[in-house]
Length: 453
Image (cartoon, rainbow, N blue to C red; front, side, top):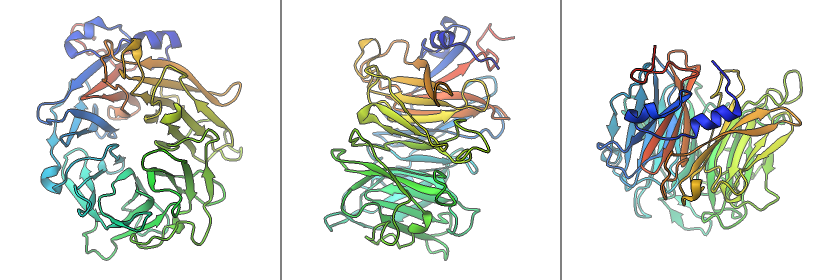
């Protein structure tokens, strides 16, 4: 595998999106498959959320969520880069729901290829659900009905959806063979324990706590990571703020043991013990933690303190910034300046370039204006650097070859392992009704007709 220079990478990959028939117009360094909404999905917002599947045999595959008219579908390639047939499912048939939330929550369990997402059922009196499907077969695994929730003003709300969901193994939460589902739902943090059991199963439980009493009325995302030595990890992190994103926001770091009550409780997560930590913004971010994920950058190495802790990547699109909190104690801010807009509305971390064990930071800015095109969208890819201090430098900027208004390229990003070993990667970028898949010929055989060996 070849690590290409900054100039070469930018020149090659900024060529953007072309159909299969147009590959020969691209430079040798990269080729792109642009997939518009498959007819079977009937979804005008195809690609609003993506997760890349783990490689089980050959090629690469991803799970694609479509919004406006709900759809779940697969997007996959064989080892020769040929697109596989699209598998499609309309989840409304099984779940009888109205649609997806404005910011769909989607998560993958890489150990089982299960995907979880939340749905809006309709009126306030309708229950809400979190659904789990097999990401490869699209067969339903579980549909969990969430009880009504006390709003901050004391009213009972049923249709509060979750903006964040993740799979995790939490100590002290039952069998480690079945991961818990952790959700950020309204002002509450929810842990669904042993969700694969029947609803009446003896081990099935929904636990929860209010993230901030009446201080916050919404939560944006939740993840599980080991980010502090004060607790023998992992911890649960939940980003909380205002539903309309018009007030303060912060990220709470909680011991999983703090989530012990039944979901219907209105008790604060900090009723008996204070949060392990709080992450705030001096700039008064209204959406701090809109997206969060754990990573492992080589900011320090063993035996340095914090070397084994997770690094935390979190965004504040309203500030046009992504923050990285290193386990070793340092921190970094990443921003494209005036070039991006809603920078951090999608983030991914993966060793995309050269399989050297050092991941890159991938950031979507769907409201940026490439070539002056309003909300055409861009994706920025950063390399980790160690000098003069641990941080990031821009390696390349991706955008469609011919951006159009409101295309919103970068509204979702994911990286899917490619091939039986999974050491190679393809980058997938969602836009308005389309998904772009980037292959690099420095890492894969060039399979375009007449080009390959």
